[in-house]
Image 1 (cartoon, helix red, strand yellow):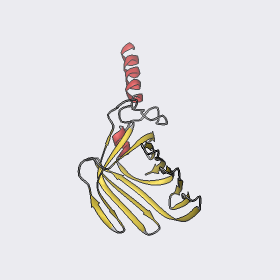
Image 2: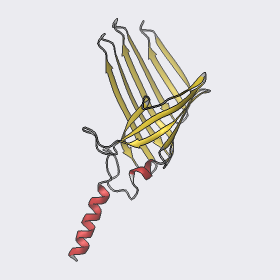
Image 3: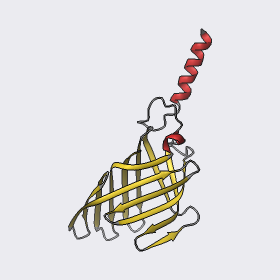
Image 4: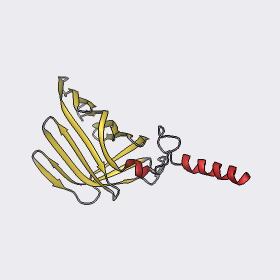
Length: 193
C-alpha cells in the first residue's frame, strides 16, 4: 500500500512539473514540445508600440487582431490620428525537427519567415522552457526577400499559457538610447490549433 501511495505521489509531482507558464494546466500528459508542435493560427491578439524621438516627438501604434481581421489606430509625431481596418491572417507552424514557418497577411500583402525554434534554457528569472526563441533565417515580403545568417534576427515569446489546442504568446521589450529616444513594443497573441 505504501509503495502505491509513494508511486502516486511521485507521478503527480512529475506530471505537475510540466507546468511552466502561469496559466498552464496543472497536469498534462503531453510534453511542452508535443503541445507546441503543429500548425497554429491566431484567435485574437494585440500589438502596441510607441516611440519617442530624440526631439521628444511621440508616435503610437495599436493593432487589434481577430481570426481574420485587424483594426489599427496610430498617432504620428504631429499628433495626427490614423485608423485602418482590413483582412488579416497569421499562422505559425512549429515542426518537431525544430523548423518554423510564419505567415502573416495584411489585406493582400503576405509576409513569410522561415527559421528554427527552441525553448529557452532557464536564464535569469525565466524558467526552463517558459519561452520560445525563434531564429529567422529567411524572410519574404511583397517587394523582395532577405536571407539571414547567424542569430541576428530573433523573436522571443513568453508562453503564458500552453495547452493542447491553445497557446498564448507574450512579448514585451523596451529600448532606451543615449540620445533620449526610446521605443517600446508589447505583443500578445492567443493562438489555436
